[in-house]
Amino acid sequence: MVQQKLLTFQFNPSSRVYGYTSVNLRPGGDEQEVTLDNVEDYVALVTDFCFNTGIQRQMEAFKNGFDLVFSMEKLVFNPMELSSLLCGDQAPTWTKEDILNYTEPKLGYTKDSPGFQRFINVLLKLTSDERKAFLQFTTGCSSLPPGGLANLHPRLTVVRKVDGNDNSYPSVNTCVHYLKLPEYSTEEILRERLLIATREKGFHLN
Image 1: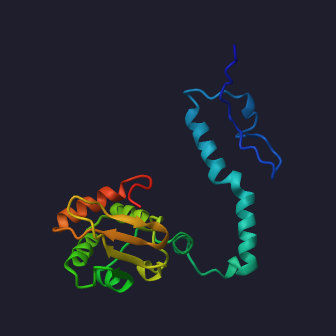
Image 2: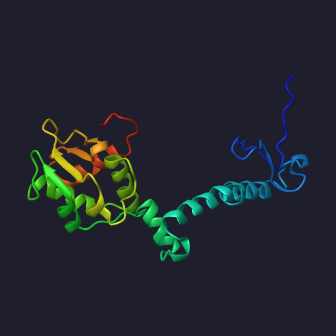
Image 3: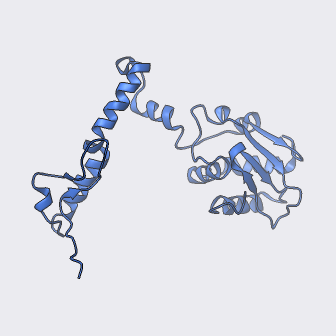
């Protein structure tokens, strides 16, 4: 019979780079069993190790590398601005003017096409989470780069899906931000089909 190993206050993030196979989360942690009474302490210590103390050397290496390009002491960004610079806009927003100026309707659509105008109206009414899902579906990333749609490259291209109808779904070529959109008869149908497509997993709608 295989003896079941007890969970202790020891974390096992083995690292050949830093030369360890396990770390005590507190002194003598390898001999302290995790119980219902102390499990919250265990979770807190694991979280701290994964996101703070356990990655201090990696973060220091990142800082030193950053300093080689631009001194951290002269960095004028606050934490939120730096996060946006590195990770993009995590709550994507756009206006009608943004969509008209920074998307490219082609192959059956123009900026004045009724089908494209319905598409614009639907995009403007999406919630923050729906916008993230739309971007994930069309670009492979749920956020926009700093500067929004103006700095999305390649730009989002919207073409008319020639064999599509009200029962069809949009499809995409994610790598080049290429959305193939049927010319739906109403905004309601467009919104419904688009949101269903954004929730689709895998490559069925590529």
